[in-house]
Image (cartoon, rainbow, N blue to C red):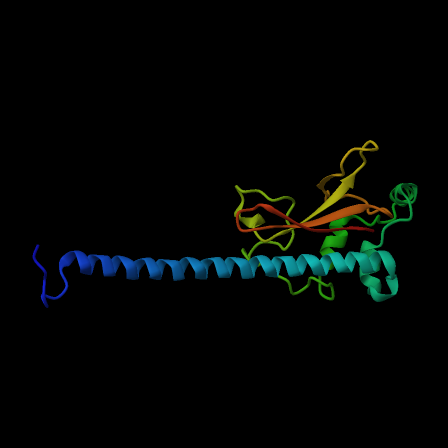
Length: 188
């Protein structure tokens, strides 16, 4: 058996060192991408939590909510009241009107942007993996009536849905892969 002495690095050793360095660079690169994604997801969560707190304030103390937003988002006392308003041609308070008021000047989400896709809306109808515009969007769902003993069911709230007192809502966001992250529930 022969022992090498002071011949320097051979090609295989140089290749191993280069492979090791490139692997370390890739780990740093992937870590940086993951950090950016996590920051954007947390920004979307913070916006959703702001909306959830706002809905809780709307349901508890209307005095904290500006009058312009109360006019658009305060729910009717009962479903019959809401039906009476639409029959008399008084503008019913719908989710679409409330959503527009939340995003309008003076609304709690006025300056918020979609952290993943700034050119798209803060709100999404649902998380759709085929649509990049839903990434980072807030999904607002209404609770559906189910038989006693059945688990709670939720569906995306329609733009024209009249807001009623005690309407259960669930707030969620879509992550980078358009998977749902549930934030919380509230009642109007």
